Image (cartoon, rainbow, N blue to C red; front, side):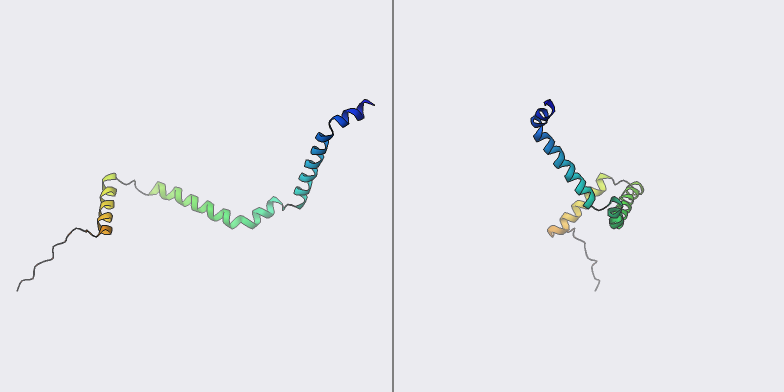
Length: 95
C-alpha cells in the first residue's frame, strides 16, 4: 500500500519524465542523421575552412604596415574625397 501512495506523491514528476522521454525519442526518430547533415553542408564547411586558412596565411605573409604611411594614405584619400587634392603644377609651354 505504501508504493501507490508514494507514486501519487510524485505523479507530476513521473508524468514530466515520461513526456520528456517520449519527446526525445520522437526527436531522435524523426530528425535527420548527423552524417546526412554533414553530407548536405560539406561544401559550406569546406569553403568556410578554406577562407579561414586563407585569412591566416595572408595575415602571416603580408608585411605589417607602418602607421606613418597609412596615416598619410588616409589623409590623401580624405583630401581627394573632399575635392582638395594637392595641386600639381603643369609644365609651362614655351612659345
